[in-house]
Length: 254
Length: 254
Image (cartoon, rainbow over the protein chains, first blue to last red):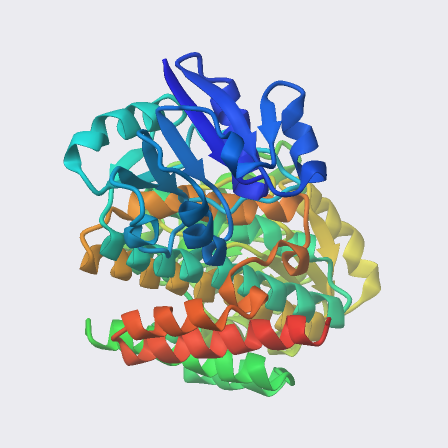
């Protein structure tokens, strides 16, 4: 049985908590949060505290707070004999330098408050300062997810950057698609099967092979016609830049 | 029973053909293609011809050829008493001006040769020159799809443009994500659950609400750190432009 103390009451803490509750080999000893109101949802099943001097002994302390608060919280905690980890995609392991046993437990997913999600298929990216601590962190990760990876701080930064491209930026393109639909009295529903198919293809093809469209074909007539339809200056600039970027990828292949 | 003649032997023709074969209220009388080799897969169940003077009488003639060949094929066909439609997202209805009964039967999906797909959930966007012809085209569409819309030529152009943003351009962002992963020895598999969740959220939220990430939060520190990691000039330019476009959308909302 691995015992944990969860520090933080936000989105990530909430999702981790629900998954740990369902894992028979994990026990959440305590949830620590500054705001008593935000701690209420956790208090039905678990001891909660707002006092950093009242923290229970545990095998692993998970700091699931916003990036700019990690080092502050780490410094407020301790000294503890257990492993102290944060859950950030971007922060260095050294943010936890106060603690001799430190690591990272980064769930690569976009969590929303509105939508609960178990971690089973969420990739967990692990890192430890001392290799001897990897075993317990891996055991904890495997208790809630089938997708566990050992990733260095440097790799994690690049992974987070790649995540911004595939998640944040593609969602913005969906927003642009919806805006075009609304302006021309078309239901956004029309585009959803196409979006789903774009993602479905990733199971059988690399994005490089799956690429279609006027830029891939260097169909300048269609690209000019599209540019003439656009009015928003950001949409025009994005259409040009994305098309040029595609052209360069496939131009090099010719 | 609606009888059709299918002109074209490419990707779209292939997918339409398979769906029509399975529709009890539709009969494909003939497939017309210039290239006898490409017609072979159709010939097992249906009469095929390469000769435009040998075209059978039918209720609907579907011209499923590449955009720049539509007008040529339309002019080579006829005169016929049935309804003549093309399947393009970008071409005007007037490309079929030779025919008094004309229309558009545009399936909004990205078809690949490698992946067969029935049309059941594919939106079919219909347009007719004479409103009196709408009934038969709608009946034909409903025989193969549950998602049928009447869309004008002007709307269809904007819809195709929106499709480029949500499909072609987001696939290119997936390619960039994969490139970053490869460069840093990370498996692209790590990003797939995140990509799937991005799309899954569209069922319960608008893209405008679903947006997350450093640009949405105006987290300049993370954005600067990301830019410092990028080396490819197109990726840098895209990161800046997409982030600025997101900032402007949410800046306006503050």
